[in-house]
Length: 123
Image (tube, rainbow, N blue to C red):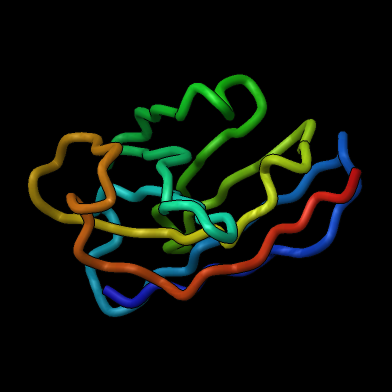
């Protein structure tokens, strides 16, 4: 499956952004999707994941502010970020895995990655 993330940009602290990840070339409904981010000088970190049937999990740092969702009819996964803070500044990546079907917080579990989209939050 090929993944393409979009929707990044510049936003002021306290604002919101919605990132989208369009998938093609695979059977969308069988994949577990994850969102990760990487800030300059830091390692890639887990943000959120969503299962085939819509169960989700979040990093503690975004719990209550970010929401991940999937649209199986249109092959899109979205990440809604609210109350954004400068620490949320990073390149955001979407990823997919087919097996196993369980949620995963480790980047090593995912074997399909899209190009990232930059999110910059100004103070």
